Amino acid sequence: MEDLIFKAEQGDAEAQFALGEYYYHAAEDGAQDYEQAVYWYRKAAEQGHASAQARLGYFYYTGWGVPRDYDLSASWYRKAAEQGDADAQYTLGYYYVEGYGVPDDEEQANYWYLKAAEQGHVEAQVDLGKNYYRGDGVPEDYAQAAYWYRKAAEQDHDYAKYYLAEMYYYGEDGVPQDYEQAVYWYSKVDEMGAMYYLYDMELLSYNLGRCYYWGLGVAQDYEQAVHWFRKAAEQGDADAQFSLGRCYYNGKGVLQDKQEAVYWYRRAAEQGNVCAQYNLGGCYEEGDGVSRDIEQAIFWYRRAAEQEDTDAQEALERLQGK
Image (cartoon, rainbow, N blue to C red; front, side, top):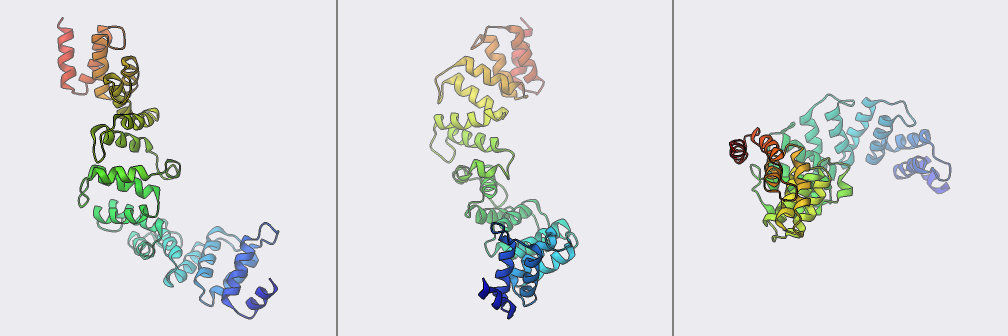
């Protein structure tokens, strides 16, 4: 430690930065001191030390050891960014999005995101992918969006894996539909890791279920389909609830159980799923998995008919004409 202090006092920028890091992180031995950290970071930063410049940017952002000042924060991040510091480039891009110490400017944000992304900065790659997908500050370009999502996905970023899978699942301009790629990337998503980024994990499970059920991009496997439909159904996805009910009704991937089919049809039907409403009507009409009840059949056929389901309209006409 004495040697480090000596070198720092002699003007060694690396030692000054290291001493700043020590005072920043040394919580365990009680030596943490943000003001001292800022002092040594500034000494190194004024000599052009990019990491120290970025640290000063962070401290001015947080207000640790200095009064909070977004303008100074942006200024120090810019100095580091101009020297090629990828974290600083990404942060400066974010500042242009939020207007922290700089004007709101999506084009400038993407300029700095690109600089960071080209150095492998995963969050910059994700944000660049988002912006190309939405046309924020750059021309809308799905191929470019997929390119940057793939870069981030290959670094194990769950948001990027999920949305890359979505692009392949549905197909976009410049990104042909490719179920094999969709299944590959859906299957790579870590559900726990993705919870921070995603709010529709049930859609991932449902889409994987459909791929296994129909053999899209993967060998047809009803048991795997049931597994994924169940995950989505238990999270409240109406399409998955209907699909799981259909599996129980037909005995695909599970033992045939029409009572269980009615249970899942009902859950989906109550959420407005038109196929489930029609099938539930059919179960009541035929007494499949439930006591035969024409009034209930009419009720559910009517719900589906109101959504312009022609089969339900015909069934309703047939029953009401009796």
